[in-house]
Length: 354
Image 1 (cartoon, rainbow, N blue to C red):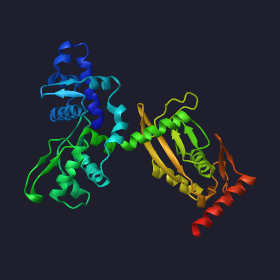
Image 2 (spheres, rainbow, N blue to C red):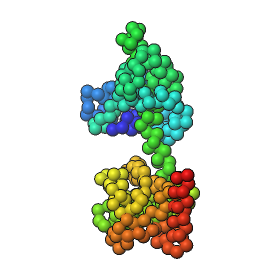
Image 3 (tube, rainbow, N blue to C red):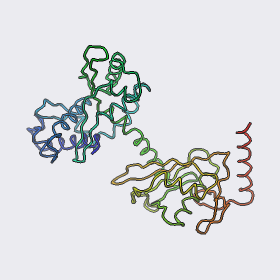
Image 4 (cartoon, helix red, strand yellow):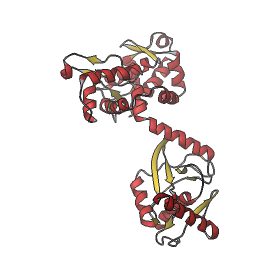
């Protein structure tokens, strides 16, 4: 289980237990009762996992704990009933921004600190900051470790109970990454991709956006259709970025089909390399969506490569065919349109060589 999901699970469970129970609402939920309610079988780590979650909920003003029980604040109850803490992630990305050099160390510190178990729980632990510096190839210096720790504490990325001892580089500088640090180091890219995908679904199909319910690359037909769609987006002259979104029904616009876990960027790039010339550049992302995974394929078009063509026959398509996208339809480029693409490619190559 991801740590961010574990914290939400604890938050929502405490809210549920306190609802309708005046004693629990007033005094807090007993930790042993909470442990039983969570039904966690990993007895060796459940207390550590609960302590991590409660500490982070306290830091975010969502809970108050005393080691024996946990009581949610009004904010904690409100977020629990909204489905968890994810609704506030954008503000974390905007507010808690480490210096670039500190961010690299923080990413390694979070990686070292995180323990995400298959037993439906997760926790974080205190780690030595000098080890994080060492692991990314930075100078291991106690003074730098202390200064970095103080900077990260000041923006809420490390808990306040850092253990710092004297003794130069032999001293300790141990610190505990917070929920905020875990989110900005492990979830920011995914969250930005979810926001992009939501925008694509809202906009639906356009000249630069193609929506698909499923994508498979097993048969010649599937490979041919994939290459046709990628090249059409690459060849079509539009401003802005070009995307294929996968997993959504064309009629209902609902998410219906989780992406095949075997599908990978390498597989797609191999198909494109086999059938396209030049080979279009793509960027592939899996995006958690509902109970499954959707996908985004971004197509990168370069003027110096125009027009993108089929390198050889595949299925019913012939070598040298050039596809373009007209609004939501993919068609073969011919006549003036094809000549215009060829001329644009020549201009792009001329500019590139000058």
